[in-house]
Amino acid sequence: MNRQVFLKSLLGGAAFAALPRGLAGSELGDALNSSIADLKRPATGSMIGYADSPIAQVRIGIVGLGNRGYTLLQMLAHDIEQGNCQVTAICDLNADYVSRASTWLSSYQTSKAMEVVGNKDAWEAVAKSDDVDLLLIVTPWEWHAPMAVMAMESGKHVAMEVPAAHTLDDCWELVSVAEKTQRHCIMIENCCYNDEELWVLNMIDSGVFGDITHAEGAYLHDLRAHMLSSDYYQDQWRLQHHRVRNGNFYTTHGLGPISMYLGIGRGDRFEHLTSMSSREKNLSDAFNASSGVDSSEFACGDMNNTLMKTQKGKTVLLQFDVHTARPYSRINKVVGTSAVHDGYPSRLYVDKGELVYWGHKWLSESERGEYQSRYRHPMLEKLDAIKAKYKQGHGGMDFVMMHRLVRCMNLGQPLDLNVYDGALWSAVSPLSEMSVAMHGQRVDVPDFTGGAGDDSRPLEIMREIG
Image (cartoon, rainbow, N blue to C red; front, side, top):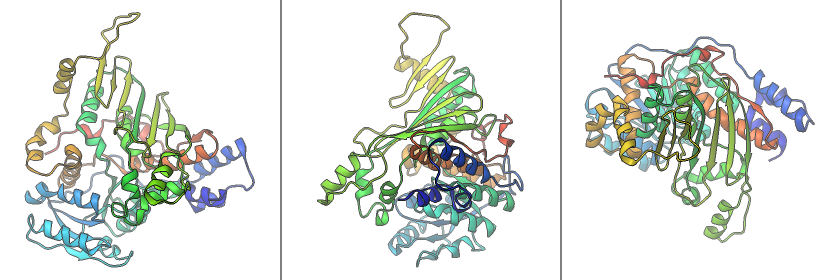
C-alpha cells in the first residue's frame, strides 16, 4: 500500500486532503499530529451522563448473525422471557443464519421477527424500521461506523461490536452524530464485564490499590486457524486486515478495563502514544503450510507494543499478537502505590507498608480468594442464579453486558459506556499504525469529549441497577 492510500485509510479523507505532500521524519510526525487535531468536530451536545426516556420493552434489530451475532442473540433469552426486550428484526447475507436465529427465537418469544436477507444494502431496512429501538451491529469491522451513523440518523440507539471504527474521521463522525441526534451509541466491550476485571475495578474503587501509576493489557490470542478458515470469518475478512495493516487493531479487550481502572474520560485522558511492531513470521508460515503456497504478504507484525501516557502521568502498555502459538492472555496488570495485580493466572500483592530488601510474595491462593470474595462486584452476585440457567457467553460476561444494556434502557438510565469511550478505544488502532509507520514516533491522542471528560465522576458500571 503506498503512503497516500495508507494515510487516507487511517485518517479519513478530510484530514488526508490537508496533509502536506513529500514530508518525512519528524516533519511528517508534526504534520500528522496537526491533521489529527484538525479532525476535531464542534460539540453539538454531550452524551456524558445522557439518559433517554425509559423503554419498557426494548425492540432490538440485529444485523449480522454469524458466530458472534448468534451468541449475542442467545444472551437475550432471560430479558426476552422477562419482557424487558424483544427481537423485532434479524438480518444477514446468509439465509441459513437468519433461519437459525428465527428458529431459536421461536422458543422465547411468540412474535416473529422481520427477516431480512439480500445484498449488502439490505440491512438499511432494519436501520430504518419503525419497529426497532436499538440496532445491534455484529458485522465485519468496516461496516460498524456507516451502519451506526444511518441508524442514529433514523432515530435508533446503537450497540456495536468492537471496534466502533477504524479511521479517525469515522470515530469523530460517530461522536458528532450521537451528539446531534441524542441517540446512545455504545461499543459493547464484553471484557469490561468479566468477573476478574470487575473484581479488580471494585478494589481500585475501594482504595485497595492506592494511586494507580501503570497498567498493562493485551489481546494475545492465537487466531491463525480462525483467520485462515474459509468458514469462520466469511471471505476471510479478518485475514485481509493483516495483509495491509500493521499496528494494534484489536485494542479494546485490554484498553477497555484499563480505561475504567484509570478513570479515562472521568477525570483523566490519554495524551499521546508510541507504537512499534516486530517482524511478521508466524502467520505467513501458517498460511504457507495450510495453503501450499509460498506467500509472506502480511503487513502486520507478530507482536505490537503500544505505550501510552495519560494527562496525569500514568502509563499504559498494550500488546497485540494473534499470530503466535501461545496460551490466551489479556495480561490485566495494574500497578498502584498499595497493591499490584497480574492476570493469567490472577495474582495479587498487597503492600503492608514495610520497606524490605527482598521477600515480596504474591498472596496465597486463599488470601487472594478472600479479596475476591470481599470485593466481588455486587451486580455479579445478583446475576449468578440467572447466568446459571442460560447459556453463558465467554464465561458469563456476554450475558452481563447485554443484560446491563437492556436494563439501562428499560429504566432510562445512562449506559455503562458512552460514544466517547468507543471512539477513543477504537482510535488507538489507527494511531498505533501511524506511529509504527513513523518508526515509533509520538502520536497525539484526540480528546473526543472536548475537555468534558476531565471532570471526575463515578464510573457508571459501578452502579447497581434493577
